[in-house]
Image (cartoon, rainbow, N blue to C red):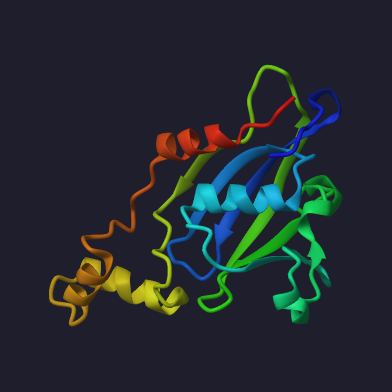
Length: 192
């Protein structure tokens, strides 16, 4: 996490929604506007439950941000570590897209719901709420996830056993543990 000056920072409330899931998988978080997009990537990984083992990128209009690498020059990404969240999301209602895992293509919408002056009384980031469990890594995108949820709901689903073996157990699509998420975020707290 980047060092942020709380006295000069704005507190952003963001809603992160995993697109293509129904009912929607989402998280609401509070962050300071002075974090970098690289920090935001790490935050999304943490609150959504991803394992950070695939490529990612942000979209804002025609601009694309990510982790520059000689191996992904084709993506023409601006260095995410050089841009602060407040430079990209400037007004209430502004949206940013975040794609994780170019194979499964998990597309998230990050919306700036509110911005107010930050205070010294709180530690950020913090997850305020959310709904539903993150899909497992490498499940096959929204289609594979939909089939997994179908198999959970239908004991006679033809691929239920396959999913249980692959996952080495069961999966609860409704699982959402706010305490666990905030405990993990505790390791990401900002330095003043």
